[in-house]
Length: 145
Image 1 (tube, helix red, strand yellow):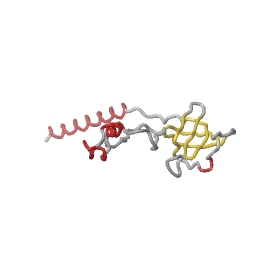
Image 2: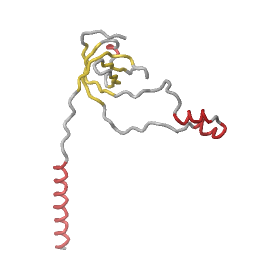
Image 3: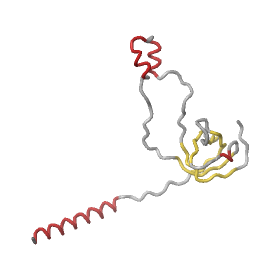
Image 4: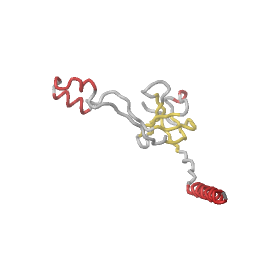
């Protein structure tokens, strides 16, 4: 009986020490510093309620999220926020397309090669870097379209 009580006490002390050491090793993450961008707000091409910011300084276009920017379309603004996280995203589909794969040997080899390569660049969704907007302020200047 005495051995089991002593063993339990030692086990509890060891668990407490391990937990305290794990808590000390975890560095506290400081929030990222806000980024300030200036440019012209444009309506996004993907759908309603999507907006982009064209920054002339580095010819970069950002997809804006986090705030409704309907009142600022076509105006030059200064926005404060941050770039969205770079979490893993799985994007893609079947190569070649299911249609080309189903036709197998009955398809012209040139068309089969084009289908396997992804075809020609056509209309589609372009992945722009996402910028989460915290605040918006109109600034002087004009937007040339």
